[in-house]
Amino acid sequence: MQTNRNSPPGIVKKLEPLWRFIALVVLLYLFLICINGMSTAIKGFGKGQVDSVMQMTSNPIVGLMVGMLVTCLLQSSSTTTTMIVTMVGSGNLSVAAAVPMIMGANIGTTITNTLVSLGSMTRSEEFRRSFAAAQIHDVFNLLTVAVLLPLEVIFGVVSKSAEWMTGFLIGRDAEKMSSPIKLHFKSVIKSITHFLEDVFGAGAANWILFGLSVGVLILALFLIVKTMKGAILRRAELFFDRVVGKSALLGMAFGAIITALVQSSSVTTSIMVPLAGAGVVTLRVLFPITLGCNVGTTITALLAAVATGTPEGLTIALCHLLFNLFGITLLYPIPAVRNFTLATVEWVALRCSERKRFAFLYVIAVFYLLPLGVLGLQKLFGG
Image: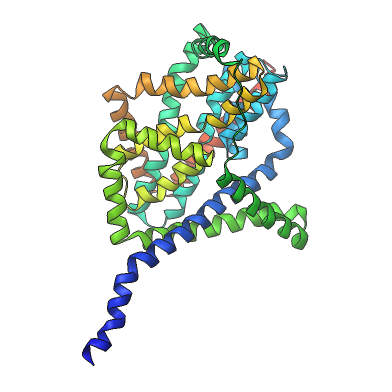
């Protein structure tokens, strides 16, 4: 009798890793739906403003701010760069004006994982790790822009290299890749949006979708961390430490491949944020993964540009790829740059975890007030 009484708990204990894994898959699915829901809602908010903003490219700093702001509105650097490729290919935008916008898109895309990190704000230690993880993407992209934008303006380092490569690639055919993962989530969000529009009307649908996405996202993040505690947490930690974290090149390859599959660096880095918050991934392991994500996200615009066969469109798509590759090869090998990046994100995260309002001020000031201020000055003085 004693054995019979103890059997059910024994079975439950043996099945625990299985149900934790199933729960984790379901929660990650909800998490990805919420990321796409936020993106769709924000696209709806900024839809009418994007085209007019994209035309304000009279100087490199303005172009940088335009790319940054549009990407913040659309929550997708892939979408922004695809729009830029289309505009360059159609002759509405020059390559020289488009390159700073591409750089700005790389900065703007970091807003998504920063917003995701805010979901753990009520748990200080977890929030500190999450916010630091999110800022690696931001700080390194800012450093890359600080080095490459002046070199591009003075010497045309990125654009001239891309034009040289275009000569070798323009004659080759490529079909536009469409990720089934991305298409699935788009389809789900489209169905939800149609339902909300039918019930509440088109005007309220975006706000409700945004509110639901943020609310479920925060809940999913909390449950992901809770579910991953224990055996799954230890196994995931071993995977990142012993496999992905074995070398920087492996980390970059992992980030690039996963991002190419989902066609969004925001999604890949946003998945990494709760893992970092739970202590599964250290900042040093996450750093090269993030850089790989920057490279992987260029595949959408690159393949689309090759498929069109337009030299200018292909050139600007290659500019996006080369910007990220140059940033990695020029900056990442320097220990001082790696140490500065990690020290900066840890300091910012510590300050924000001590005073939570700083995190909100950081997001508003860097991603919205700064580009809006520059664009406002551009409009005021017209120069």
